[in-house]
Length: 161
Image 1 (cartoon, one colour):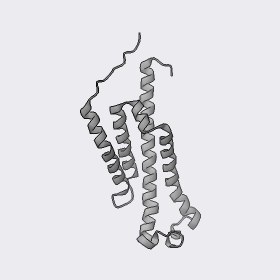
Image 2: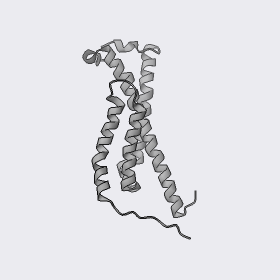
Image 3: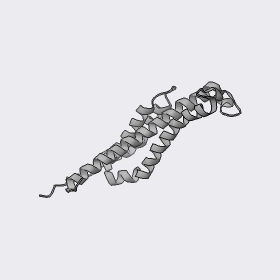
């Protein structure tokens, strides 16, 4: 008994709406991640970014979804996110013995000339950590979605696990 593959008819309205909404959802995810005026929002922004990719994959299929987010880019986002998240903490630990006092030195962190010491600390700790968490969450969710979708495709084709 061969499994029956469902073929879906293209829906132009859904495809055009997805193409229009995809960059707006990504922009909103970035806003939630870093534009809300305070720290936090990395996980929420990452899930919004992931939902944009999952919407694209759902509408256009796995093959076009992998063109939009190949595994190499996904691995890069996971690694970059962890690097940013860990890097912010390790910079504080290495340069100031577990405190962020080294940010008070404008010679070492020249951004303090423009935004002040509090702004520099907020940038490093808040935004770097939020972006790191967001990228990691987005890449992990998209990767999990692809893994589950491919497993379903293999089972429908009668493949062995």
